[in-house]
Length: 300
Image (cartoon, rainbow, N blue to C red):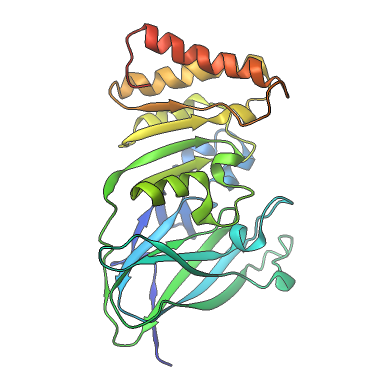
């Protein structure tokens, strides 16, 4: 009775980490749907999941409530249920860093049956503390796609825009389930999120579990983005050494051609040495780097 609810896709809420939001009955897409639909069915669905997607605002409400309608819950044996399906909240007061507050998630005993097609709803409240202005970041789940999200604050409380990140031009990450955050305990604890929280920078997570294979269509899209740096590490999803060799340098060159001054970080997968062709894969990635350096590229 003491709460006003608002649609998260309307001002003053701002969205980060996605291409579009609140379109065609889907809360968010990380890449334009037309691009991924031509690649594979799994990446079409993964594009609807919300890793790295955040909703931000400011308020002096002592609590924030959420009402969620999900299309379906995604989870693997490696994932914490709350992190793959729920909402996590961080907040900061003036002059202070963002800190973790709390989270809400659906009841594990009332899991959505994807075969029923009925959707699923859940709600909850996160207490922020005393009534004072805060910058709030709402982290959407790693492996679940939402249809609707409503955000509630105390009646009469102030509601305004997020003050913004210190570095507003995002870092873009592309890669496998590791990049996506599968296995992370929370969406604010993926490695890209930890980089963002440490540096106070915006970011875009384009990790696609099992389905980041260095496709040129994805490279062309990434090359079109306004970004402060690019990190790519899709080694784990390249099915063979030959595939990695055929795509890795090509992927780099597509982006470099469009953005000659962009810092680009190349990463190999974190396996123990000697396992699963790790050393040979590392050599392929390192070769892309050496070729770029020998060509005079000082931004790799």
